[in-house]
Length: 483
Image 1: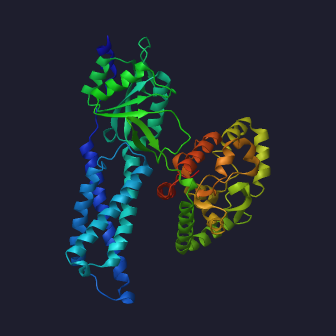
Image 2: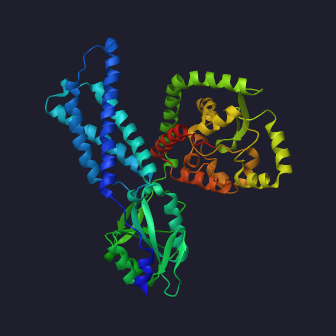
């Protein structure tokens, strides 16, 4: 009976890792070409001030050698096709590999005595742009590619029904990892076949595992959220490891940083080493330095835009250009947060009237602490919110040390009681102009889910994560996916 059942749901395995790898490699090469072109252009513009000369003959050999080195190192580190990693982990790996590859190339030119034949400024600028371009294009490609059936690696999930269903949902949300659940096998023999989140669930059996593997599934995911694994679960995990070349073991939730975990072998027992960056004072100092540098550089480009937007706001509706609101910051200190005004004057009074007159809006506001189609928003305000440009005046809050570029949301004082126990962790750091929940799920995130996402950011904080969020923020602005 099992084979007919399996034949009814068997998916068409469209996964094409070679095509995914080819597309990623093509854009990686394009990113390197673009990086050196940008470096060449900048160095050419600076010739009158810095002197010297620059020609393509000095750059081309360096470029081709770098393409070969980075391609080889990317292959050995599994970046082709590059699935199964979170964006932060891949970003960390990319920047390290690019930096090491440039270092290898620089050392090679020095040993060969060719150091004087290359432009050091071009070399440094090309390294900087390579990190940016490769990371950004990878972010874009994984985001768009994950919507294609042939981009995602099919996976089998095995565990209790509750654990499997929850994990299927997590993989479907984290589609950037390019891992697509195609079947779940439940560790209860008498359970009935059913569909959950579009994925068929069957009682676990060796025959079904074999059939699924024949369809090209090479990765199995074993899920156990119980505090202690019994003998039966250990046997099933061992059998899966013998049948499938690759295996992921999903454990229970942990309050520790999951992105910085490293596996250790402790006399035959697996252990996890965790680095909690929030307690590292140097990380916080570097974060503050980066905030100030980016804010200063961004003012060159954003100041003219601020002036234009201010004029549009003034023309569109009566009222002040800036909206100032009391928010809670680090250690619970209340400060004035600045935004471009996106609503009509007396918006708070009108909100109170709206909530009293419309029960549906009142329910939505209690759940999300915002209204999706808020009638108080002006025409220019809708554009500002869609592009997230209304947040830019908070650069002044960053300069004043009240906020950071990346961090948890700056919550309202009246929300403190609803934050519950989360307030203690969230108020240990500066709130951010942008953050994890803003770039990972802006529209349908409930207030409680928003708190959990802020806690996740703080627990997993790293400079790599901040850089990833900033890249995602650029994408949100360009794509107009703001709240």
